[in-house]
Amino acid sequence: MTQTFTPRVFSGIKPSGGLQLGNYLGAIKRWVDMQGKGFENIYCVVDLHAITVWQDPRELKDATREVAAGMLASGIDPTTSILFNQSQVPEHAELAWIFNCVARVGWMNRMTQFKDKAGSNAEAVSLGLYAYPALMAADILLYHATHVPVGEDQKQHVELTRDIATKFNHDFKTDFFPLTEPVIEGPGMRVMNLRDGSRKMSKSGDSDMERINMTDDADTISKKFKKAKTDPAPLPETVAGLKDRPEARNLVDIYASLSDMTPEQVIAQYPGAGWGTFKPALADLAVEKLAPISTEMKRLMADKGEIDLILAKGAERARAIAAPILRQTYDIVGLLRS
Ligand code: TYM
Image (tube, rainbow, N blue to C red; front, side, top):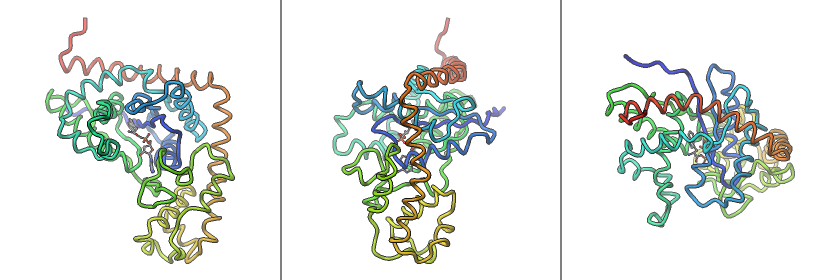
């Protein structure tokens, strides 16, 4: 007999270093769009993932609140969606341990994000950083989530989640865990660095000019787009002309994602335009869409108690789903519960 699973979305963001535009376009904006579409939506600030690299304990709580504020300011509705921080639902860590015993070392060795993050220092990074994808699988499968909207950089981790579910189901002769679908679509899946179109935009990086932070004010957003690196040629007449022009491609994709257009539609609106035309248009669009979010984040951060209350209520609702799934997992594995 094959189980049927409730259509359920799970996704998360680490509270390390603040939110940047890639988090918004690759994740949060799409989470907002997935509300009211027939899914149960569960969105998580994954603080246990953040501590796989050093986090200053004096800053971590506020970083967690700030990510929650970013989600709320962008339009996540905590009354319909479940919004919480991971460490308030201990079942995540418990299921992660079970999955540590399912996943194979060879699978972990193939994780490109670990290789990127560990670099030449792989012997000295935390064991948690290595085991991180098993915790991510636990986040997802603890809710029997069927869909996971993420940016492209997380694709391999969602594929590993499917491998873990498949092996668990096979080893224990069950169909208990679903094969979760990654949802990776649209022009915001891979937002690149504004100074180097071959690198993804990220929270860490040498210069603040290479990324848009979700807390940047209108002037800063505008300045960063106007100073973004490009090649000297104007925009092409068709999208095919963006090939091998990573910086131009990135700015067109960002415009498309912010305006809910396709890159083809953006090019049709600005065929052959010079940067003197396109960059100010992009800067204006970004300010129009992002400045209200940063203003609302600041307002929300002024009342930390309110954010904490939202996260506590969300954690309670999350636990109501997670606890029975963990109990059943323990039973399947043969762990004694008296
Ligand atoms: P994190 O915190 O690095 O990023 C959160 C989300 O933002 C997306 N993202 C981007 N999308 C497009 N362009 C970019 N430049 C860009 N930068 C970040 C990421 O793809 C992600 O969707 N391991 C995850 C967090 C996590 C998770 C989960 C996600 C833990 N458990 C369960 C989904 C389901 C991470 O580190 O994301």
